[in-house]
Structure formats: C-alpha cells, structure tokens
Image 1 (cartoon, helix red, strand yellow):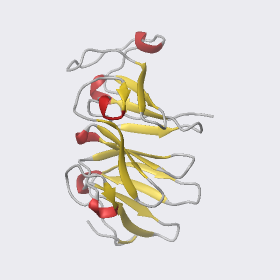
Image 2 (cartoon, helix red, strand yellow):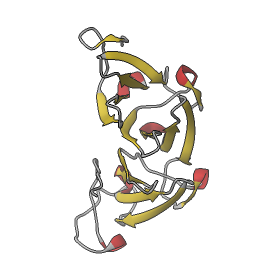
Image 3 (spheres, helix red, strand yellow):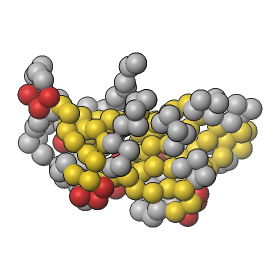
Image 4 (cartoon, one colour):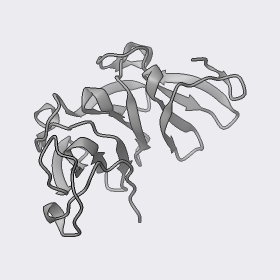
Length: 185
C-alpha cells in the first residue's frame, strides 16, 4: 500500500475501476480495504477506508471488508460493493461513506438494511439513479433505487448452490456466480 504518483503508488488486488465525468479514476483496492482515487495528473490517494471492518464515516474513518465493484452515478456519488460485509455502500462527493443497502449474508429484497446480499461483486449505475448488482453467490441480478429499495430483476437459484444456466425473463433466468455487470443507454 502506498499513496503517491502513479509510478510509485501501490495497490493490493484491485478488482473494480470506474471513471467520473471529469476524468478521475476510482479503484476498489480490495485487499487493502480502501477506495483509491487517481487524478488526471496521476496522483493516487485514499478516498475512503483504512482497514478491514465495517464503519460508516468520512474518509479513512470508514471501513470496508474486501470492496470489489465500483461505479460512479450521474450525481457524482461513488457506489461500492462491500463484498465481505454483504452491503452496498455509497461515498458522497464530500467523502462521506454510508450504507445504501444490505446487512447479513443471505437473500432478501427490501429497503436498506432489510435487504440481504450474498457476496455481491459487480455494480453499475444507470442515468435514472438506479444501481444494478451482480449478487454472485445468490446467482441473481439485483436493482437498487436511489432510496435503497432492493429488488431482484433476474435469476433465481437456491442459496448455497452452484447456480445454473437458463435463458428466460426475470426470475425464470438462471445464473451461476454472476461477476460483472454494465448498463447501456
């Protein structure tokens, strides 16, 4: 781990990357439990996170446990999949980390902490304020509104299974450990 210019900076297993509207790059530095920012001039710094754990707060007061996916929404918020905490976190433009949805591992649609994820991995945001999650170990694709309401839009497998494969509409479709996700226009 090292914050520095790009040629001297160090990360430990980065697994997600996103770019905002003005060219800043954000990296989920998974094994360092941090979210890193790279400016257009090549300066790498820690935006949020410090050690493994779960704490909402500003900057390095916040704690993540293996962040994996990362996306930037149309208002400049950074959305983070906090994989081992089974939560979706949001970092405001001011650097405040809060929990948008999730709680204990499992599968449950709901609002905020009533929702459950099972080792989510990928995330992306659309232009309407929604986020989409590759909820890997539940073998589902989930949608989160800007108010934290989580619904399943595709997939339906038994938790703890290896998933399956089937084309279909909504929960008739089957996945096996979806990992990445993207939206188009």
